[in-house]
Every structure is written in structure tokens, then in C-alpha cells.
Image (cartoon, rainbow, N blue to C red):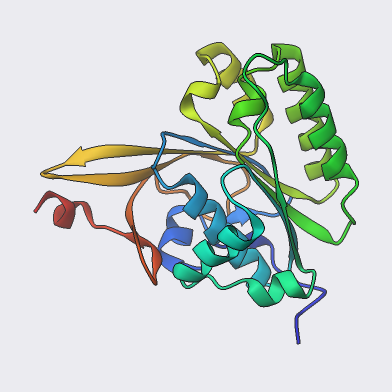
Length: 237
């Protein structure tokens, strides 16, 4: 039977190695900015956090611009992160999102997304939105700051929100302002290590982490396993 009153204090990735690098996991009540390059593993990281939350007994909402409901469930299943039962039991809600036309100011759409967050039942403690790139890159600065400030208020009331964006979504000044509102900031990128391309997660900031955070995690995504840490010495070989 699924646990309805979880005692967890952090959201895990399901990998003890990665959680250790994150200082134990993402503390509940955090606003998380997960930012990075294309194909750097942002969606896979979100799926790991989602799986970790669900298996710990938390209910969650997943907004996606990348997938349909069916394709998201299938993708997670292929990484051994099977959440179909949680979806069928209404412990996980999935909402596909349309990316607005680039000629349209997305400020009103950001307001609608914020309201949709607020209208979710209180027992849905984790909200993942993958991704906000199309909305924030075509909205005015005030609307973006207001959106993240509203998300922070929801987190202060006990929600945990993971907001995903591509690195190009913000200019440097806006990134500093948004980052200051967030409790955690994870940066994903691709790096050339020896003769191979490696996915890298930089733990730029985690407020109230249980342990000291590791700065950099090198990983790959393997079918049937999901995220797998790669020792740098092995990556260089």
C-alpha cells in the first residue's frame, strides 16, 4: 500500500552516490532551478527526483513540454523508473504543456501556470516543470521575477518546486536575480573529458543541505539504469 504520510525530509534521486554529492538530497520546501545545455540530462534528473519522491510516499505533479503522458511514462520505464502505478493511483499527475509561439509575450501564460500550481491539492508536495524555457525567454523581466517569487511563496508553505530551463533562457543579470530567489541551483552541461563527452552536474547551491555538497558530478544515462556516476579517472581513460 502506498504511504500517504511520509516522514522524508529530502527528495532523493534514488541513487545514494548522487544524493551524497547533493548533500543528502533536495530538502523539502525548496525552490530548485535546474538549468543547463540541451541533451545534458535535465529531464533525466527531473525523472530521478520524481521517482525518488514517489517511492518515498510523496505525491507530485509533473508539467512537461517535451512529452505526452504516454511517452513520459514510457521514457521513465526505460530507465527503470517505473511510475505507472503511481500515475494510475493519482499519486502522480502529468500535464503536457504547449510551448507558446515565440512572437507572443508569454507573461500571461506564466500567470496561468502559477495559478495551476496553486490549484493543485495540498497533498501534492512536489511540482516539476520541464521546461520553462519557452515561457521565461519570451516574457518580460518583471513577469519572470513575479513568477519565481510566487513559486518561492508556495515553497514556504511546504511545496517543493523544480523549475527546468535551458542555459540561454536568462541573460546574466536575470540569472543572478532568479538564482537569489531559489534555494537550490543545479547546472548541467556537457564536457569533453579525454576522448568522450560526459554529462556534468554542478551543484552551485543547495540551501539547508544535510551535508556539505559536492561541487561536480560526472554521469552518464544508461538504458535500464538511468543516471550513473562516472569517476573522472575512468572518463579520461
